Image (cartoon, rainbow, N blue to C red; front, side, top):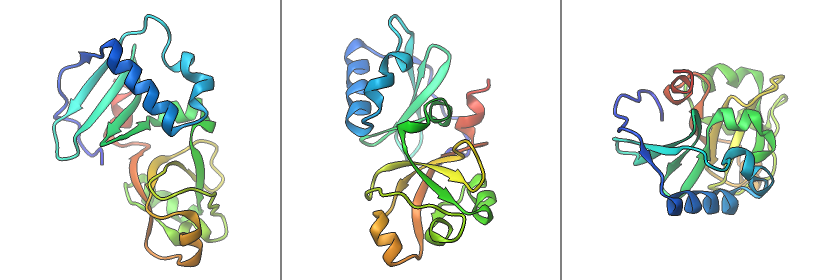
Length: 178
C-alpha cells in the first residue's frame, strides 16, 4: 500500500475535535488503547496530519515527531513503531518462516502460512486489524486486515487471509526515520 509517499500534502494541525474523534476511533477499535492513551497523546502535544493524494484516501497522523497511525476509510491503523512500543495493542498473527520474505516484499498473508507448522492463527474477525509476526521474530513485521475470520481460514486454508497494509521497509516505515 505504501510503495511511494511522494504525494503527501503539507501537514495540518488537527483540531481539538479532530483529536477527540481520533481517540474515540482508537478506543472503539482497540480495547487496550484506553490504558496507553496518555502515552500516545500526551497533553499539549503537536498533533498533525498529512493527506496522501492517491486512490486510497489515506491520512497519516503524527504526534510531535512520531508517526502513530494512519486512517483508511473508517479504520484507524497504528504505525508499526507504535505496535513495537505497545505490542498488546493488536491481535497477533504469526506466519511460518517461509512467508517472511514475501511479506517484507509487500505480499498479502496467505492462509497456509498461518496454519502450517511455525504459523499461529489467533481468533480474529473479518475486517479486524491485526499485527503480523514472523516465526522466531520478536517484533511485528506488518499490519493488515483480516479477509476472513479465523474459523473460516481454518476450515478453508486457501487464498489471501490477511490484506497487508503496512510492513517493515515500506515508504511509511522509511518516512518515520526522516
